[in-house]
Amino acid sequence: MSSLCAVCELSDYQLFEGVEQQELDQLGKGSQPTVVQKRNYIFTPDEPSNAVYLLKKGRVRISRLSDTGKQFTLVILEAGSIFGESAVFGDEPRKYYAEALDDAYICAINKHEFEKIVSSNPTVSLRLARIVEQRLEEAQEQLENLVFYDVQTRLARLLLKLADLHGEIVPGGVQIGIRLTHEDMASLIGSTRETTSKILNEFKAANYIDVVKRNIILLDQKALAEMQ
Image 1 (cartoon, rainbow, N blue to C red):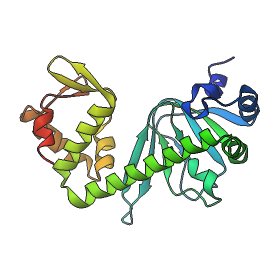
Image 2 (image 1 turned 135 degrees about the horizontal axis):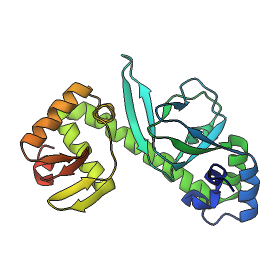
Image 3 (image 1 turned 90 degrees about the vertical axis):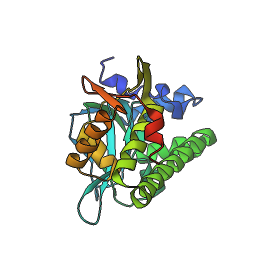
Image 4 (image 1 turned 180 degrees about the vertical axis):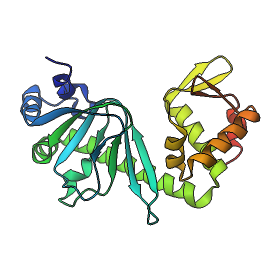
């Protein structure tokens, strides 16, 4: 089996844990493995919602445009994630952008085949509901950050969250285990790249963070938390 075909090893995904192999094999027959090159879109608003996507390798950004035309990141997904799941709940066109931040190895599953698995497996249905609930909570958190906190505080909260999700203990602090550009971070907090870079430099000057080979290390999480 080629590395590309391995994208659709459905048993690797927690969502399908406990599903009979025969069902997974049937689902896999209708799946389409592909690689989307870095910074290309997997889908964009107004496209038909005819597939659900599984991310085997790489990162994918889910975003949307504000009323002013500014792109706002809702979530950055890691390998093992599912996205485009709204296709299961209706026939409305896509509302969001899904962009590959790295070369993304994905598996596109026909929505009708996916619906069969969900409807015949209550556990899968429950897991999917939890994923949807988590996405709604993340979107709500993003909205609250925009409404209640200034840019400096939003960036501090983002760094703390990234450290909590992807933190690695290193000498002197906690290193964020994923690399995001300043533009990526700006889109996550509803700011500009220039402002984000300025605040990061201020954090570094205050010894709250350090940057080593483009990796951010949190040196003083307490100081960042006190900004909230």
